[in-house]
Image (cartoon, rainbow, N blue to C red; front, side, top):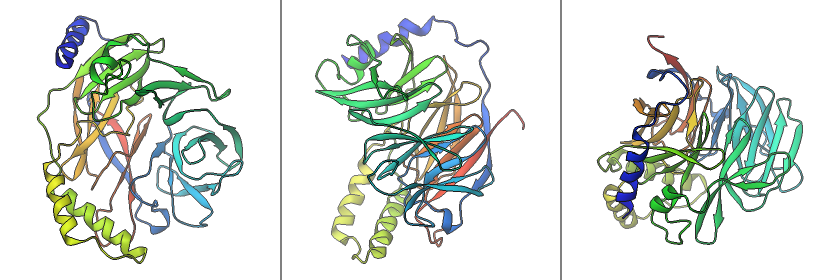
Length: 362
């Protein structure tokens, strides 16, 4: 039943003309910098990243004063500022997730304290908004798109950053959500929560397991569904070995013994058999300066970026990112990813790689 509805959606939008004028070409990636200085290493690779239109990158950092949780660097990797006092009081953060880097401010969702915060680039707190029920966010020019838990699944919502009010974006009779997730009909059909995101004319909801990307306008109307038929993929042995090595190194740093060999063997077998999601859950879909949508996923022990126009798939770019696991940022002509260090002797839990998005032969 799910399959037939999915195909029906595709046929329904196949005759629609491209949106936004001329279809952009396939971009390229040019490496800008990699954080190899231990002072700029984030706490671990499982940390969201926000990128600004000028190439500034905001990420969680373990460096410097232990009371400051985040580091902001420029497009050359130079430290601009540390910010985010640790704690649960006004303006403090417990589990920060960088959301946006603007020209004059940065925005952060603090999961631990359930509050949305904004600072200027001098580190002065500008506002603190505490919405209800919001569980995850991705930023787009005027609104924050996120997922909130409802009685039998998830709902896509927008957060008004001034008032803190939530607005549900998906109508109760939405065919894509019902077919792929069963969220509004009360039957959870997907192993993964919907992946939110944005495009040039609204918001996006993607099915990570079946690789279907639904484009909506801000009024909740479904425009089209972009879908890719791909063979199932599995984690590489290198990815699994990297995972265990990281776990054991972190355990040693805490003074704990390494993982039991029997347990590791069982987990390795399960890992090799498990099918990877086609789209990395937790990594919101974003658009670049030419309104192309970027979808990132795991490939072997590294990563890929699938690039779409509003009406078609443009191509796939390999991204050298050891043990990529879903944390990345994009804004304008800049893409950043969190990875394990390329040099296995590097004494840090993770690195940030920044790439410049270029066109044609540039």
